[in-house]
Each structure stands twice: as structure tokens, then as C-alpha cells.
Image (cartoon, rainbow, N blue to C red; front, side):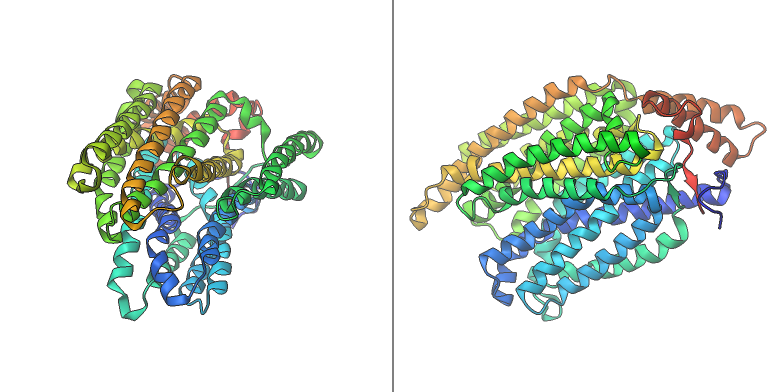
Length: 538
């Protein structure tokens, strides 16, 4: 094994094949995390009955994961840059698997809450490494295909969680009630840990970096001051201290920016690489990602409440109703990056925003027309239209955000992408209290609950449509065509030119270098092209 200071080695034929196995492993881990975010919701009634959990416990079972996850994402990404993305990925997936076992075997609600917080913290170590490993492992001309696959996984994970949770809960495997929703992670996590050690190639930042502990403290404090009041606000009737905390979070983030500037100038090892925001595609993509997270945060929660509380459907029926949406997202995500974006660029994302907005309007119309008598098959059309729109956004957006990011900052960028999405989701969930619950009276008779939830659902979707319109406008700030695809075309041409007298591995390595160096220059990286040189420690 070579040291971290050694010259990067050229991937050989074995490594060329291994990276696709590595991709399958990290994609599986990403899917496991996405499912775990949503799988708990449908099992909440079973958890309450079996464990005697209070409403406060239930809040923390769901919110504890999200808070720990969001607060640790940027730190997890930077730790991967410093200590190695493979190493942090393995630590994260191992810890996530252990935490899942603790959740599944929890003897009381307090243990379940603590285990969920640990699970979220381990996910914060694991998830940022997924995009970082992809970015550092694959040359530019292949990343479009890879991000298309990633978008498909995101689509499947977003909706399959509730369906899987409903099935596992209703099946009551071995009389374990809700526990299999956590225990299912054990075989997947163990397999990922074993295979990851073998097939993932280590990479880290080419320059020696140190962990910015003050930055970690500031970013964690700022995120908690913002997200904690949003998470607990409705339960506590929106106390004044919550608004004060969210206002002071802005000051903490301001202090973070000022400190990170000084830190970068002093030793070049900031937690948040502020130079990334000078890259137009990254800055614009982060803004779109945040607002898109708000739309998703509103929609998925009110959709679940609408079907289960408003229409009185079982968790299984609600989960099955989402299958067309999931299939549409996955299909559109795969097509968007591989076939559409190389031809039409940014217009694909804007078409996605308009299509998803159209699907939301169709849903509003159907919910009003059919009322309480609406059926699952009548929801298929708006869900498919929304799913296609979402699929046209999720994969190309990730592609666009990372297309010009130097490989040395891949971990930091990946952590920021995931963090702002979680912040957007938290903001959306906070807005649910206003745009959904704010329209429902607290003194409804039983017969009035269903119609009230249906009306509130329509009102909330109006806000989702407004947010999608805002996203469409924000997308004008994205580059007309992601640089990665321009580079990828050049790289592919270079690779073809080598076919006559160069091995496939050598051509592939040359393609990767050709694709990465312009990105580094666009991002203000060193002129010697060091941004393109992912350090291999394999």
C-alpha cells in the first residue's frame, strides 16, 4: 500500500472493472439511507402500540435522525477529503448497520430515540462519500451515465421507503411488529462493508488538510439553532425562543463565513470551501437544491397525511399508490442525464420544473373534483406527471452542481449538497404547520376530519406549485450546458484516438485527466492541474 504522499498511480484493467462494483456498493448504501429516512413514518402507529412511545418520543424518532444527519453532513464530507473517502464510507456504513441493529432491538422508546440519533450521525459520515467516490473515481465523460443511475436510485428510494415500511409492518415477520424496518439494514450493511473493503479504491484530497474544529462547532450550532425550532415548533406551539433561535442562526452562519475566510487564508484547511461558491454552476445549483428540498418537504408529508388521515387508507394502500410515481422518477432520471441533458442542457431541468408543477396542478384539480371518493388509479396521471418532472431534475441537478468542482473538494461539495437539501426539507416540514395544519381547525367532529384534510391538501399543493415556479426561474442561473458534458465529449474523443495503440486502461486514465483539468481551472484550482489528480492510496 502506498503512502498518501506518493504519486497517483494509473488505474489498471482490474481497477477499471472494480469501479463499477464500487459504484453498485455506494449506490446501495445511498438507497439504504434514502429508504431509512421515510420507512419509519408508516410504522409509527405500530411503534406506539408496541413500545408505549409518547408523542414526544415519536417526534424524536423521526426528527432525531434528520437533525443528526443534517448537522454532520459537511463535517463528514470534509473528513472523507482528509482521511480517505473509502475509509470514512466503511466507518459510516459499519456504524449505520450497528445503529440499525440497536434500533431493531431497542427495549424502550428512549433507547430507540438514542439509536436513531446515532443512525443519523453515521449516515452523515457515509452519505457524503457516495458522490465523492463517484466524482473521484469516474472520468468526466462517464459521470453523466453514473449520475443518471444515481438519480434513478434517488427516485426509487424516495417512494419505496413507505411501501417497504408498510409491507414489513403488516407482515409482522416472526412476530417482531415494526422491528424489521430497521433489521432489514443488517444484511445489506454487512455485505456493503465486506464488498466495499475489496472493491472501492481509496481517494482523498491531494493536499494535506486538517479538520477545522471551530468550523465544525459553528456549522453544527447554526444548523441545530435553525432546524430544532422548525422540527419542534408545532408541537410546542411555536414559542418565541424558537424564532429567536432561528434569527440567531443567521448570525452564527455569518460568523462561520467570516471565520472560514480567515481559516482558508491562514492554512488552506477550512471546513466549508467558500471558493466553491465562486463556481457559478455550484452556487446556482445549491440555491435550486435548497428550494427544491422545500417543495419535497411539503409534498411528501402532506401527501401521506392526506391519504391515511384524510381518505382513511391503510399504510399499504398508500404505499402502493406511490408506485407509479417512483417508476416515473426512476425512468425519467435515467433518461435525463444520459440522453437529454447532453442535447438540451439546462432546458431539461427547467422542463422538469414545469412538468412537476403541471402534475401538482392536476393533483389539485382531481382532489377537488373527486373529493373523498378519489381512487388510487385516478391519482396515477398526476403522480406520473410529477414523477417525470422530478426525474428530470434530481439527476441532472447533481450533475450540474458537481460538474466544475475540483476533485480535491469533492467531499466538501458533496456534504454541502446534502446539507442544503436537508435544510430545504426541514424548512418545508416547518411550513407544513402553516400551509397544511394552519388551515385545519382543532375542534373538528370525526365526520369533518376527512374533508378538512382534503381541503388542506389542496391548499398545501398550491404552495408547492408556487415553489416549483420559483425553481424554474432560479434555474436560469445554471449554466446552459453543464461543463462536464462538454469535457466528456472531448474525453471520449481522446479515448477513441488511443484505441489503436493504447490499452483500454491507459485511454481511460487519459480521458479522466482530460475531463477533470478544465473543471479545476474553471474552479480556480492550481494551474498545475492538481485539482484533477485524485490521490490513490489503493
